[in-house]
Image 1: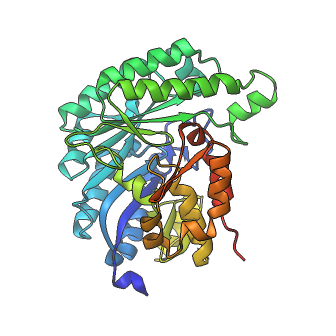
Image 2 (image 1 turned 60 degrees about the horizontal axis):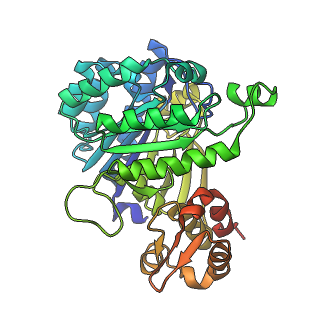
Length: 390
């Protein structure tokens, strides 16, 4: 197995607990309870022990759920286990935080063990919309937590924002962006609200409690791109904007999230925790989306896989093509071939032409990338580039 030769350089850990389920959320998460969280930490440490020999992480990302919900004691146990397993020392290590769950002690503990990037789920700075989304934090908590993180030594902070929220006007969106940019974070991730089945927001939409205004959503996205640019941020992916220090770089601003870039560029990633999906040796490995079953399997000393899917080289390349086009830099043809063994100009010539004809794509001698308009429809273009398993 090639894993033994080249260790996987990227690690994702899913922490499934939340203080409350947000109205829009379709991710696997559940309300937190002390006993369950302790069992989860035990199981996660076991899973880390199983994969540690084939892992040398340069990027680590703890997502959720709300990883900051784990207690200081639980974090300490996890970090000590990672130290014992030689999993510390990543170049970039991100932990997602909810502004209501950032204590000074926890922030210092994480920073002291090498966590050097925080992603804070702000979503909005409008009290009415925070209530609407079912968020547990207030405006004030965002600013307080941000200062607390800075004081603990974090100099790479991302703020997550949402637009096209029901009841959000353009004026509210502009005010939120202005306040977020004034905070001086290094990174912004801005997502359009998606109405996923089995979420309260979707049910309210179906019940006619509000309408989706696509025109306003497009206008908000346009406003975002212009506002972020004038605020000193470089867009490098559909929803992601980062500041850049130093010399202008060809493709990536210096504060781009390296972990996600690896993912969009088709790199391998080991994923731990319930419902986490990894990609190792051309196989897509998905863990069970059930914390109870996850803990039971690992108590038996086995990984809690729900499915392991071996992708054909072409299907894998198609997925990689689709993901990579979310980035402003698109795909340099040489890099794509180096990554997948396939030539984008041969197998995907028709799809590129279709995007060019729609004014959604630009093809040069070196690369193919989406236009500003095309970025708005990146998901549609992605579907064209996918190659189903034969």
